[in-house]
Image 1: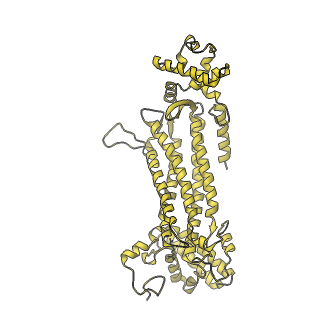
Image 2: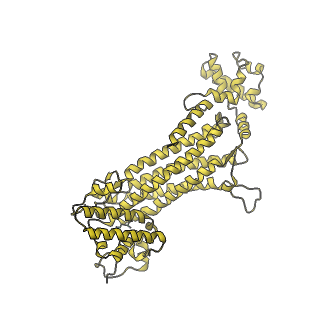
Image 3: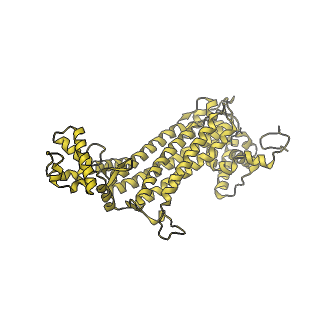
Length: 459
Ligand code: ARG
């Protein structure tokens, strides 16, 4: 009897501790679907190449179908002693169909096998994440559409800057998420290449048809260097980087939701189902979901750092270090999936408080730039106009009024070119409508963007 699953070379068994330390089956069993898919493609190719008999090929297909049923129904017995998902499935296959099961690993190593499994798994996950990302964008577009005319103070340095449409503000996040989708789509191309056929590290002496396996698995091509194929994990790192950026966008949005919901802003309310109370303060309603998303962005970024550190010192080719790529990658995908789902619902449940937003915009001299622009149109150089308005704002602050509350006589005291028509310019709505350049906050622009997003997301 062999002391270990893989070889008679070993003369002593592993301690329980070492077994637990080296085994990955507790987490990598999640790759089982990809593992079976890859094995079936490999077996089919072995058969086509005359390396596997028709009977053996049929036996493998039969055995794998049975294993699939067992795993799905929960009756499959995962064994820690069999180390990982690959050896567990192969051992069960051999138990079920005998020698045919032992022939499956011809021209293959767990090194190219695991790299293939992770790629197949990640490809499927990306394909599920992309529609969720579209749904979130669509939810935001819908809230934006209802709030094109709602005005809130736009900030720079968190100081009131200029009035903007609330819809326009939300569409800024839609742009970010659209780029995240673009990035995930791009990463997918590099995930979708086939390592199988690289074997342990150097290729194999069997006449394998790697292109055939790639076609069977719907992959866009084969990894062209066997050493690179088994050792590289940059596709996973790239995915984590895209995931981190996505989570940073979610985190910035969360930060704004949290601020906007605080009593000091009072711009929005979040539906109760996304908040919790306090066990001591009866009045509390806390924005837990955005706070957690902000926290979880740190977790995803941490995983990216973990993967980068994992790779940095590895010599070619495969090293067991790479087994550590799975948990961070799995957790990143899980976090992303939940976050995207929850945020699409959360966005739809935002209650907007337009009066509070407008009040805040009026408090901060948000139309000062408009007054300067008005003077420029009357012939003043912009720098001079800027200076004139600074004086007006200074006096208005001292008087405790908004610029629009100064009398025409008072305003004309700053410059004789100021006329009655200045008041249209000093209104929040006038300011908004004036910013009618492409990508600006004028309602006409915002409506155009909404139409563009709707068309883009309709597919
Ligand atoms: N469980 C391993 C991993 O996740 C599979 C490959 C192991 N290969 C080996 N030669 N030990 O990377």
